[in-house]
Amino acid sequence: MRLPSLAGERMRLRILIPVLTTIAVPAVVLFVYSFFGGAELAVGNLVLRVQSGTSYPLQAPTAVANTGLAYPAKSEGSGLSARNAILFIGDGMGIGAVSAASDLLERPGFALEMTATPHVALVRTWATDNLAPDSAATATAMATGFKTRKKAVGVLEDGTSVENLFEVARANGRSTGVITTSGLVDATPASFTVHAGWRDDYHEIFEKMLASGTDLMIGGDWVLFDKARRNREYLNLVSRAEELGQDHGYQVIRDQNSMESAKLPLLALFPRRPVGGNSHGPSLAETTRRAVELLGEDPDGFLLLVETEITDELGHSNDIVSVMDGMRELNEAVAAALAMTRDAGETLVVVTADHDTGSLAVVGGGYEEGRATVRWATGKHSSQWVPLFSFGPGAERFRGVLDNTEVGKLAAQALGFYDLARMADNTNN
Image 1 (spheres, rainbow, N blue to C red):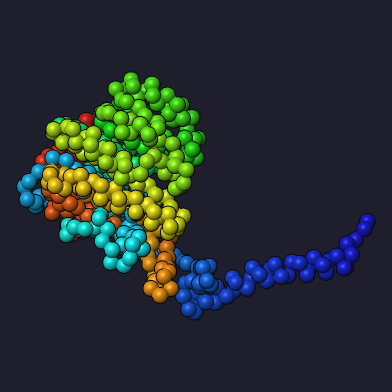
Image 2: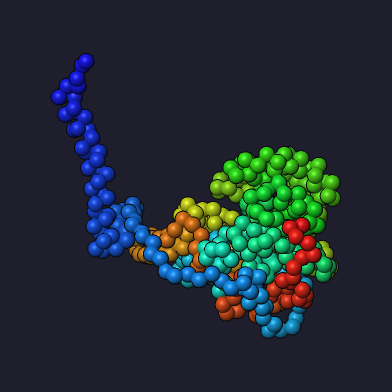
């Protein structure tokens, strides 16, 4: 048996010791610094961070709060009804993202179109099973006026369906439409249009969206999204989208160059953009303008939901450049909507978020250096309140600190109907 030579062992040690030292020294420095001086150490563009969570007693919400009945919609307002309403949702757009965009997209003090209003509110976002919610629970709360658990789409914890804002709008003669940069069947558009027990049941959600009666649906086909790719039933439905859409009366388009010639009812399923993460289709400003043109042909008015997913997806990655790109795109879409509707004075425009992602903060910015420093508290959702900005008839109803269950109720009031926040006639329909 041949034993390893002493020289060979020494050689291995000469290689291993510097490697271990390279790993250990920064770890020790970070530990000592965090213990005595703070939670993070910055070396150039490299930030070493130590964070430890501490616990605090937490009580569960009451049963009545779980249904949203603890937050009745306010009745104050001018009494003037809006003919139309457009609800913009920056997914994951906490107040830190809005604040950063106002500082970084142009210059400090730059007035974003989405914030240029005196009608401002803060919105609570918790879900019934977690302080840090997901998009399904928060979109359901906004769309129905009822709190629910994470993953639930338009239903309560036990699966009971609750009527959504789109259903009430159609019952009152309005046309309805939804736009998202994410997959069309993602949690936010799904929660405003259908009812399902779990947000990941994409095949069920897609079938229900086709049967929902929504006049305009624009979003991604999601065939490159990992979770959707694991759902063979969903992929099969998307491959048959033209056939299925036509069976439900939709004009189906898969090419964004067809937007200008599109007519209602419209189903647009777009591929992923070449850049921009998991984003799909034309810019939000382009799709918003076309949607307002098409839905605006209805003399009785319309309700339109517009969502960007960029602020959430890239917030999870703590990617400040991409999040600011998402904020710019959303702001341009809001500007386009306001330019088209403001003069007529018939359209309520609300800009808000479903929840905060990342808890972004700008912590430094020397003007001479021309660089800002940002920090993120997490790569997950948080319980931070989110901002809300409103314009047009009924905008004055949105003020103060609101629960997210009030957003849809107040929009319904502004549109002149008051029958939101009702149980549906059946369960999980």
